[in-house]
Length: 134
Image 1 (cartoon, rainbow, N blue to C red):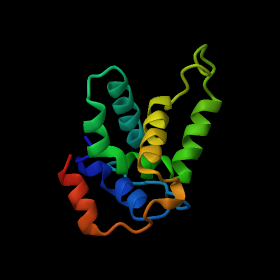
Image 2 (cartoon, rainbow, N blue to C red):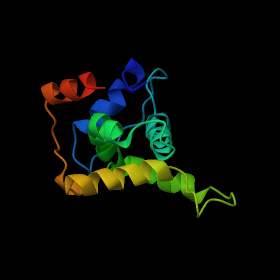
Image 3 (cartoon, rainbow, N blue to C red):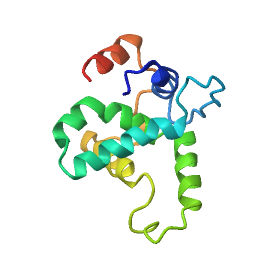
Image 4 (cartoon, helix red, strand yellow):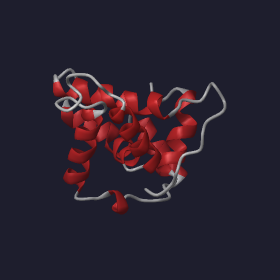
């Protein structure tokens, strides 16, 4: 799914900037928004947790995308807003985007990095290499 063109803009915006970069509103309806984008990582985290996808494979193919997305302030704000409006019984025990959060924190720890350690300007070659490995 992440190879679909609708994810190009948000992926490039997140990967090409540091962890202080605020995402713009995407006015083109064909571009994915923040919730569309991070929902993929939430699903991936769920699939890893129930062993539908091997955790090592998920890490090798998506760790950079997940770390960079998790560290973006607009993504964090979106998650906080979603959680604040969640009135379900499981809001505390199973928070929205909890699987995404678990993967991101696990991957950052595995890499021995914090959000501030992630590269702020990924070259086009590195991005293409990452995308090809998917």
